[in-house]
Image (cartoon, rainbow, N blue to C red; front, side):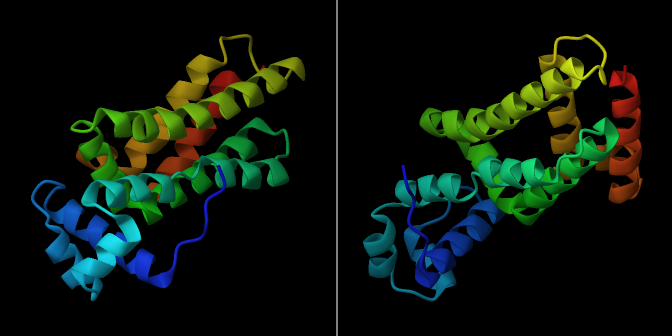
Length: 194
């Protein structure tokens, strides 16, 4: 399904909604508060999105990032395991970091709205996992990676990156994020090299 680009008004409303929902939560935020924060009327909010749920769903769609991410990866792929995984980690973490509040809101709200869970919790990570599985299969076919079920390192790689960006590593260590990415990817790649 082809998506039309959002207008400046829609972006303002969406950004305000994400900010407020990150601060409070979906149930606690009113459309009146969102409209005020976006500097638009509540009627304008409804004209663009129809309902608060539609606004949340628009956020899910807006922050579906895997297709553009993988297109960038495909253009820069070198078939060097460590270099490629570092590229993927940096792009993935950068996109998540840029949209951290939105991902936090969407993750939290997917528990309350099962239909969002499919989009938030499965669509993006599963899509990226599938791309990684195919990449690992190709690396195995080229003799550059050990013979393991390629889904295992794909899932492990995603966990490592998602946890790093969403702050779970902050509980365990004060390592600089870029140093963590570089060293973790190096260790990960060395464990997979044939």
